[in-house]
Length: 335
Image (cartoon, rainbow, N blue to C red; front, side, top):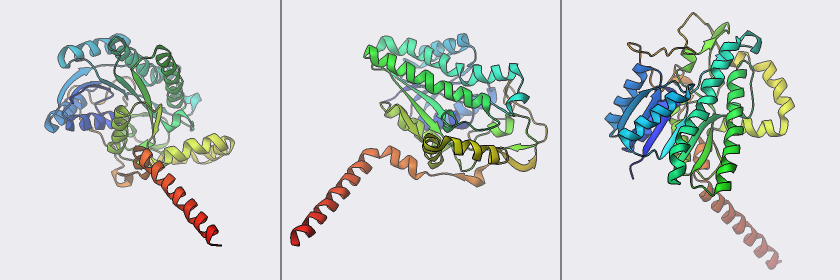
C-alpha cells in the first residue's frame, strides 16, 4: 500500500537515506530541508527508485514554514501517513565557547523543529484518527557527552516531549502513534559542515554506522510504531544500559576520553558551516547520505536484527528454556 511520507532534514544524512528507502517502496515522499542541491538530489534518488517526490525548502526552526510545507505536501501527494523528524544542527565546543545565539539556534532546529513537525503532523492525523510520527533520536539523548551540550540537551528534550505526548494520545484513545528511534554514531556529512571550535577535525565517536542501516531502523519503527522506543546499533544499547547502572563511572570515563574520541588526528581547517545557512544551497554541492568515514563504518548490526525479530528471538529462547527444563526433568526421573 502506497503511503505519503514527510521527512525533515531530507537533503543529507539519515533523512536522505530514509527518503531513498521510501522511494524504493514506491511511496509519495515530501522532502523538507534548507539545502537546494541536497533536495534536488533527493528528488532524483526517489524518482529513480520508483517513488514520487516533492521538495519543499523549509527551515524547521520556523513553525509557519513547517505548517506551509505540510499543506503543500498534502495538496500535492495526499493525506500524510508517516512523518519522520530528522533535521538537526549542532556545535562542537565546550559549553562556555558556544555563543548564546548559537545555542539558541541549535535548540530551535534540533528540538523545536521536532515540536513543529509533530504539531503539523498531528493537526492532520488526529482528525483522521490515524498516522505515525517517528522521532529520530540519539543515544546522546539518554547519555550526554562532552563538547555537544546543545545537541545533547535537544535530544533529551525530544524524549521528554515525546513521552508526554504519548500519554496524552493514550488518554484520548487515539490511533495516532508516536515512537522514537535512538541512533548510534552515524557516518553523515554533518562532520564536514558542523560548526566546530575543536583544534582537530570532528568525527563521530566509534563505532560508526552507515546511514542506510539507521534508515532501516526508522522504517521498521514506522511500520511497527506501538513500541515507544527502538535502539539502533550495539553501541546505543551498551551506552543506554551502562548509563542506567553506572552513570558516575561514565562521567569520569567520558571526561577522560570524550574530547579525543570526537576528533581525528588532522587539524581542522576553515570550512563552511550549516548552522545559519545550508552549505548545499542554490548552486551548491549535493553531499548525499554518507559522510567521509565510509572506510570505518559498519553496514550491519546484530542488535538491529534482534530488535526487528524480537518475538522470534523470545520464542526461540522460551523454546530453548523449555527443552532444557524437559531434559533436566528427564534426567532426574531416570535417577
